Image (tube, rainbow, N blue to C red; front, top):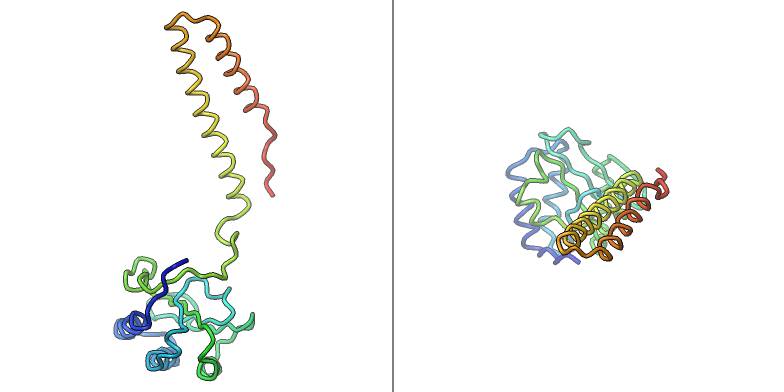
Length: 191
């Protein structure tokens, strides 16, 4: 689990962000300023990516990003009405609030990354598709096969150097079986 980000670090980050970025919706500035001035709420704020999976979250976008200007998510409902969002935030200060900020090169920004937390609501398979899993399994199988094949070839060469016919025949048989098994393994189905 990630180390929690302190309220002071979040506060410093929000101040920095508001100084350096112009937001697409002026109400977003109001919301961030409100959060900034309420320590109880600040402790419940979490900066994350992919806020759409969170039970209660906001997407705030700066002018330098092409993303949507503003979104508020609450229990799978979505609104672009910043005033409704503000009232929800004001009335539910004891609930966790997840914030996703969209601005130019946000993934490379050390200030943002320092307050960014792992989103606990993102589904496990969100970043990895079934096709990716199939390809990863194929790559792993090929890598293991190549390693075993190379190891057997080295041992076969050593048996030849030592003129050990029994060892040579045994290892050659293992190599043939390995190659046969790899060539004839069932093909992975794309799911």
